[in-house]
Image 1 (cartoon, rainbow, N blue to C red):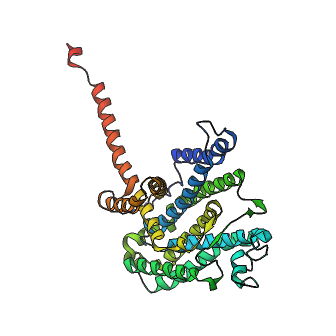
Image 2 (image 1 turned 90 degrees about the vertical axis):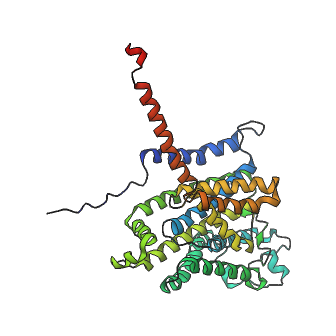
Image 3 (image 1 turned 30 degrees about the vertical axis):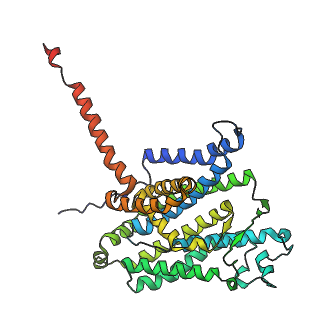
Length: 386
């Protein structure tokens, strides 16, 4: 009688993986604060406030890329609307930060300045819980999650797939951007929210607060990475990959792909909302331009450059692309978009598995080359035999 051997469950991280994770946690939580707060500014080892802000912003983008990898790399659903979920989380946090200004605004009113300017007398209904930090933390994930769930429920039940799904998500984001541009929505119109002063009644423009937000962002990124590793290695993750590779066969095997796709779609949107909430206090502004279709396309580019279905790849891609962007937009601003387009085309044609795929190809070559060198050294020399 033959026995069926089931695949063993993979560990979340290997021994080397855990070592790298702990090192990254120490760097984010201890080394970076030490270099920024304790090391003198004239020292070579000092981490400047500019670097803290830039790296913190890119880490928010890395969370976005990780969320994109879960839905695109592991489920095969290309979303061009993740910028919406990112912006929704940012707007929820921005509403709280605007309420924290209090009467310190230009008009010395408890209402945000833009409402006073537009002659609003009271707060709109959707600002009801904006003065509560606990409620804000809940809404940061609940609002993007609810929007994603409602959209995904109807889209997946209608069997919308492939390029059609991508186009619809892009249209959804564009429509939301146009809505948020209107002053009647009560979210600041085209100017959005800015001039933040406090968070939890603590001044936001201090070096200590910037570093606190930096550490929180880094720890959140590492936590989401660990969560994503656990998720893709679970039975749920294996079903997602099966849906990506052969959805029809998954249905014949007795699984309903709709529930799996809807769940990972909602989880991915919630991760984007958290990234947006961490992004806004560090950058100091949120406006409807964050919902532009171009921003959502950039998220897909980060995942593609780093390497889809690898988790670490999209994080690397976010750092590579945005690091290049921060330099090019200053040195050669007119060439930035050309570089971005050329990068995406080049990766699509020559590096379908991204930077991580290239490294995996190159590493076996070096290992093989090193092994052959060792073998040659171990061979007896003809002159020695004589």
